[in-house]
Amino acid sequence: MKMLLKRVLIKSFAGFGIYNASKFALEGFSEAMAAEVAPLGIKVSIIEPGPFRTNFAGNGLGQAKKLIDDYSETAGLFRTKLKSVDGKQEGDPIKASKAIIDLVNSENPTLRLPLGKVAILTIESKLDSIKSELEETRSIAENAIYT
Image (cartoon, rainbow, N blue to C red; front, side, top):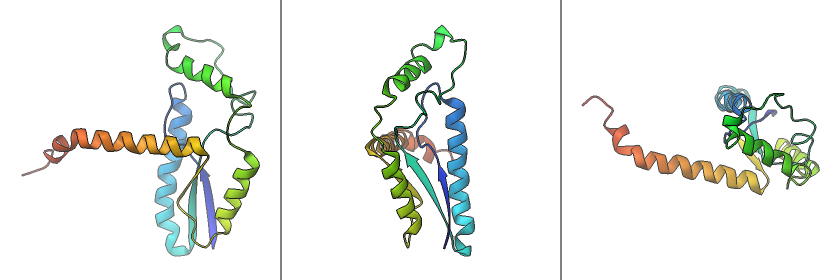
């Protein structure tokens, strides 16, 4: 069995628009590719990690030289939060690596592999939000058809 792995993000965050967009695109592409290559015996898995103790929130995080005050309560708050968690993230990169290797070696790998408690909570929160909005707009959606 051949396997392709992709790392994506399921929920967007203020101040990370370009990053979010690239990860969402990768997720959609990976879902389609999984269906396209399945008959060839190729499996695709999407890795959905929470925060891990890497350099991502520290020195690896590039920032704009000029900050715009209008964004201080949105993107600015996220930027501050990101800096404050550097070195304190729950995720262990070694354990994540092992989980990914185990997934690759499994007989039937899942399409998605969340890694960490924050990842699980984030995915659950996103699903709850989508479900709530679906119920709120159900009648509008159902009436937007030819009759």
